Length: 468
Image 1 (tube, rainbow, N blue to C red):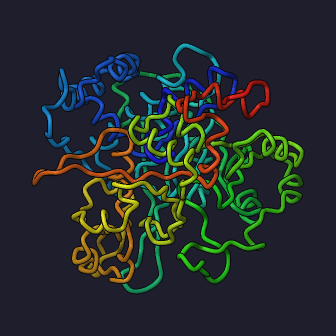
Image 2 (image 1 turned 180 degrees about the vertical axis):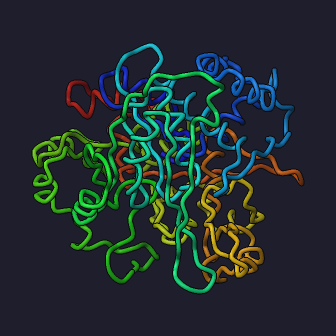
């Protein structure tokens, strides 16, 4: 769901209908800061912050970022601190508050469960983000794009407001990769307010193979409550194909039998699992349930419903392309700085067009997908394969690693109507990710009635009401 596409509005709509609404946990510190700079017109952010347990922190954030009436036109958003291994207090405060606000608003007005989804590849904000979501009562934590071995232990510690640690990967300057541990202690932010223990949310790692599920069951210290089993048809980041990378004639990764999940192994593990990746139809839901799944995870239809945070212009453009039979999703093996294949939904005028992207000046000013690396002097620096090539290679990166890389951080936030304004003029353009099932969005709408709701999606998938 990129950044904020599955916002509190969408998660709330889904949860109120008795299903599991899940908010995207990516870049919620930036989302919070930009909503406030845009004036928080409807007052939702400020209302959520009024329930935040640490009001001094809430006041500091409001004083720093809230602009009554919003920014002046064409004014850049105020930058916020990038995350570093040592931890920046202001960056941590925005993470805690941003995750709290999103989950609080998603849970407001009903008693049904709400989940949050994180990317393991974005390691530095994990602990303050997780703690903020837990303060708001998040029910389920879903983690993909990596092997999240340490989330259960962090959840257990933070539920008791105890210090939690997380191992961060450090790219070696010359030799093998190394690691270091970061520590987050809630006591440093507590404002002398004694809080009762928090409810432990369930932990559901996303896996692309039965082998990974077995590894997690053996190596994780703590509780795994189930799995989301995601195939290569799902949107966002996909797991790379197993074995030597082979590409189609147009440059997309080829997945084979080794990339299929043996559901018999999943069933033997004795934990519930949900299937993901092109399960947005009643037949596919029935197929998943018949295979022993507890349910399915669906993204693309919800990303294009009216409660999605995609701008109406982008959402309508994609729907019209699908209805016209011209929908295309390209699995790009190079776009993401993470090195994982990334699903790019093609749309004219967006960064999915190579000619449009080539005109963009490369910049790395949000830094979520930066990689910590060990400098020759032993200190830690940060680099991103989507930053300017000269800067990346000066930090020891390989020139070939910059080819085709795209700045997902800025583009994904532009998708939801909060694009950065360049000081020299111009605006960040969007880059949307959708799953392969996007071509079938006509299940939920037609040309005469292109808008559809989260309720329409759910009713259609459950087979109890036609959506179009």
